[in-house]
Image (cartoon, rainbow, N blue to C red):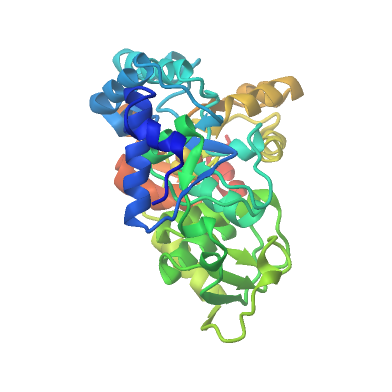
Length: 395
Ligand code: F3S
């Protein structure tokens, strides 16, 4: 891989240990994938934030980096942490977990990262441009930024996104290149997506079917942001899909000739099958919405549904701290709390230790959460639309 004079100096250790280590990591990655050079990025989004996911080795690594002066060179956001960074005690998170989690957040703060810990940075202050090169790690955010915005990122891991944040560069390969953004299979959706959860079910089914390939959807008639984020998140979870195109909806879809591509029909029976696979439990102990993190529109919709009602089971709505501030100002937090629910910021059902908090069966409307909860959090899952889930828990 070609290195500029400045990069040569970094790799020779002239700009300190942190820069050298980070550059060596990116060069190794670039060599594996035959990148020709490093390219500048507009922003980074780093994963591996929850103490539950990274444990003591991750915590020590981050504190070491921060202590040695690592600093983000570009706008850098972090993924959800393992708990609500303000209301953790009230929500039942344990003291020792909280102490370690706060040390992780402090390390990121020291490194100059924005610590509104979220998987939807594009909803709160980190919106890339069409065609902009970025280095993001959270798979649902990767999918959204590539597909819906038309920015360019590979599915980074936590360390490579951290290195990119510190150097402001990423290796030029994969989805940064035009030739790798072409669709490779067509999915003709021959069924209506009536409920919000249908998008997660479609994403789960499509991801399993296409596995790593780039699907081109036909037959989808609308593209609301919340629905596209649910679709991409579920496909990323079930099939590692980092980019998809939707005819007449996503910005690069018109660039490709899809005539020669294999085409598969997706029918209502396929969505039904996805619902059946994702539903592994009954009678949830808790309902957790907001995967990916809820938008203000989703929070408003839930507040409207439960206004004046009383919930007999816990309800969490996961979102970013920034979005919770908007919900507070709009009075949605009050409405939700009066019904017995909570807006939980900075974390989510998958990266928080809900399995250690006594929950065994979780109700979700997200295909991604339904896909991950059994393995990551030992949960049985009730997967369904918001209306149905809320009906189950109102008195
Ligand atoms: Fe976000 Fe957690 Fe879902 S990180 S996409 S809310 S699993």
